[in-house]
Image: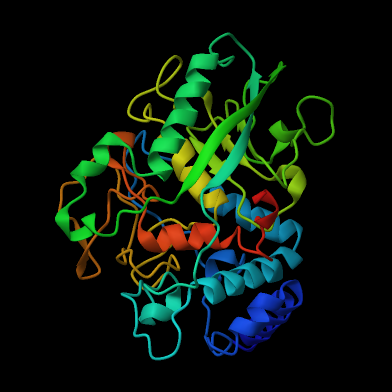
Length: 361
């Protein structure tokens, strides 16, 4: 616990150095006194919970990749703590403003995503996308139409214009968020390879010439489409990591809605889920049991991922799960919303001094 408080103090100091706006906000929002549970960022925490996952279920390796990156670069923990502190300063309630619903730790609105965030004057955010297609055979060399279909899904999902959003139960309908984030395809880079699978050690990000293949990672989202192997659908790098590996990786059969795609993950939602991680969203169950947090106040706590197409209501931790959230593990056809708290968390990254502020023109 002493170590956690020391890291928290360091995180506050790092954020204060990054931006004067945060220093001004700290007079209004007493975030520095919080106890922030970042155990998901810690390689020493017991996060290897055995979920009873059905065969052929969704497999996202973003958290495992994060733990590997922290082991390789321990200073990343402090950097992510600073980013978390920055996010809370942007989104926290002012004193006397009441509490949010909380999720997991019983801290209510102190867990981020409160209903009265710092004013967001960023407008519509436009993110260029660089798609790297790394292929060993004709199927993996996916078509332009398949790539276009994925960009279309990203835009629908992040703008809440997807047709299936109408299926959100009334309990959560008022929380559905248009994140006001658009994606545009900027470039497609194709690289032939003799390698049949790539794993999750970021080797695909150096496939073409030995150096990093990331294109302007401070201003564009890089997506690598390649066969990860092991039944893994995709993974992403959280904000704060090495710019040489920043971006998202998705296996080709789970990318887009047409062409070389495989049911039940043929709706383009793997990329939506992974881009959510790239924009600092956690798995909705907080990668732990009921008291583990996803740092968003309006998402109900849960004790495990949901799979397949669960019926509503699905009850865990004395509340109904938001199984239809993009950050759960359900099939593509059964996930169709981000929440308002998740929107606030994502957009905080682009504020002045934020880890993705360079994307704002």
